[in-house]
Image (tube, rainbow, N blue to C red):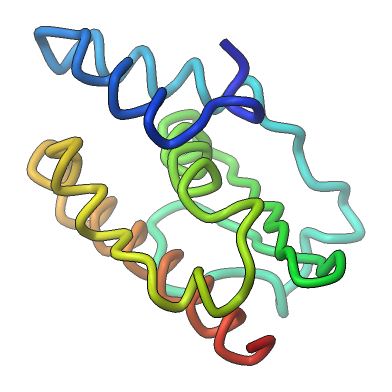
Length: 138
């Protein structure tokens, strides 16, 4: 199933289907393969998220009340983590994004416990930036 059409409940259910973390990592990487990349015009310094081990760029657009984030990275596992984050946040309003317990979802997936400290910090930096954007739009 393409990550762009996957719901949060489907993500959690699918993640629970795998018994070991090697399979979960493969699933995460596969989710990242479905993401559209950002063009070079969007891969600029103002869109770069600081605190990430890999290069990660984040843009967004607003369609009425709905915020859509576009995020890209130069690392396969990070693109997969981006896909997880986008499943959680995209298609929601700014106020709803502000109130989302994204770390709680990571907890349900037991994700942070299986990432390196630097990857976990990068993931948190991405979430922080998303929340900042949502706050600015609310």
